[in-house]
Image (tube, rainbow, N blue to C red; front, top):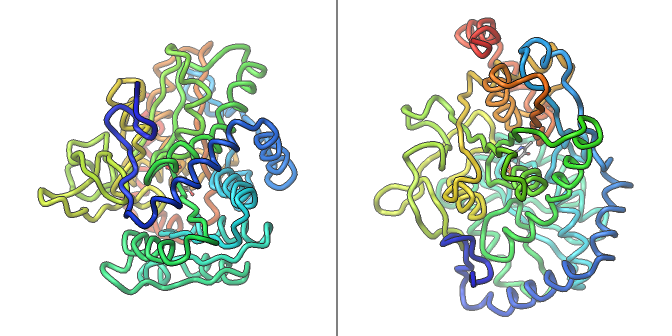
Length: 409
Ligand SMILES: *Cc1c(COP(=O)(O)O)cnc(C)c1O
């Protein structure tokens, strides 16, 4: 039998000795909550009244017609409170914190989206909240820092190391070790030590449960393919879980191809040849690291996909051949984004646009009586300055104008 917390040979809980009891308590509290159907119902009710769930499944009728292939459906996680699927996870963990009787939450954030979601949850549940953020990210993400503070959180600027996400993770763990009794660490994605991958995947499974019921009702059968972007992997695991037991439904994870897989400037762990197995940040997975095991500098136009590791659950599903991995470059992302805005009146986040790219490449080669689903993890409003800058760059513009024909070819 598989050891708990392992997915194939991936996962585990590589934690400092002092956190052992805290993790034991967390595992017990989570197991009890998971086994209690009233807890899941409480979560569903909370999301229905606070975060617009169930989120709609939208038929992209114009683009389906343009491409002349599969019927394209979009699962609208952008319509969640705070603008992305992250709300599912943080609100779920908030309910768990209440159940455990803890009074304080901490989190680390790179782009700031997880920090804003966590600060929102803390305000709603009356919890004290501290967010760790690298100095470099604080500078780049001013509006998010502003909102976290206005929501009542304390934002701690981390000035050690490279002053980015991985340094913020170290600081947050140091905090947790010093205040285990009253504090819960809100993990933002399906990574980190057990039970976090399982816990975050469970809360995010609400996406897949809804999507399966919706596509069955609206289209009369299951989709042939389901696409999701992959940073840590939480929105992907969320929707994939609705279809994992149906082998005829192909699952596709799309990573950040950045400037291209040959450029060295990307964040593709499983779609590139650049990652290798390793243990870091409390778990075993494929990391973008050098031969000495030092984490590499990753890059993506989408801050939420710019991460060195990937969910151990997805690494296992990739190894089994159940999930196919692809990468989308920054330029392809801008092209898909423009197309989606102009033809469907929908503004996807830069992260989500990676999933749209791969779906648009494949839709023309599928049949009109087939459906595909794109998980739209979040809305693009937050990306306004990046998108504006990209549209000013003439090299991207050429690419944008020629894209439709290219994908359909
Ligand atoms: C954070 C974020 C992601 C990446 O996280 P996953 O855990 O891979 O889902 C993707 N899309 C949006 C909009 C995000 O905010």
